[in-house]
Image 1 (tube, rainbow, N blue to C red):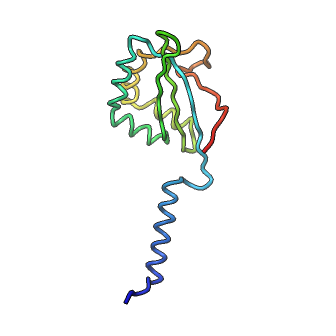
Image 2: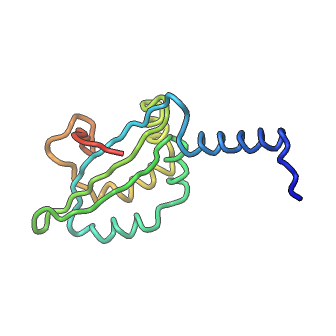
Image 3: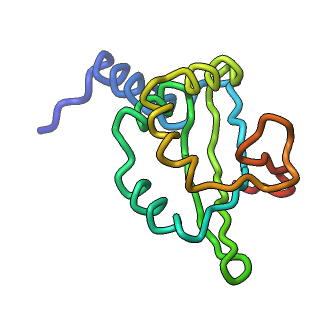
Length: 143
């Protein structure tokens, strides 16, 4: 004969489910900001860039997470013969993007990483002052 589940166990199961949903879907009221950007990549550096990103340093990945960067992807496309571009996409889940971006830029391991990746890149001509990767406007999104 099966024993009925006690009230305490039922409450614990519900609490665990609520916690799991909270962890899976974030904090209520917190929005996710999506960012897309583009930059050129030197044709002679395409394979080096691919190799670097096949072995991203754990410290770089940890700092991105600490700075609330999630779902980060970089795509490579040869647009015209010999003209390569990178498109990046990421989601920001924090509350203060300027603070987190400054913390990211100040990190010594991130700076060392950029010393390897920056020489591979060529900024696009039409970008905002101070941008390497040119920000893009989102024109469509669906979930």
